[in-house]
Image 1 (cartoon, rainbow, N blue to C red):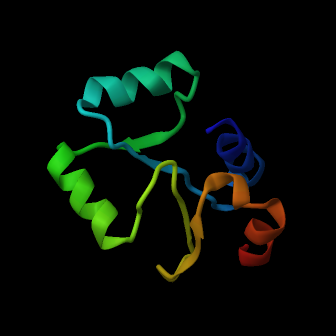
Image 2: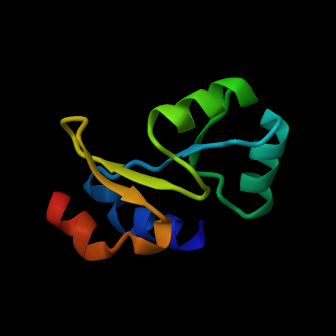
Length: 94
């Protein structure tokens, strides 16, 4: 999360949005993690564990963390581990 958040901070003024989808068992666990680590400016999405699992299955997420970069047209341009996401990839999509 630190590296992903840093990329977002670098590009947020250019329209990059960071959404966190949590697979935590409760909303309070998801919010607690963000708050405890100072990520107060991240938009967190949480739903029941059943719904989260359905989303993970639909998008082929077999492990976490998993990151997607979705362009302005809704096309997934990157899908993988967040450590594989580079500034140059984000810049190429801006």
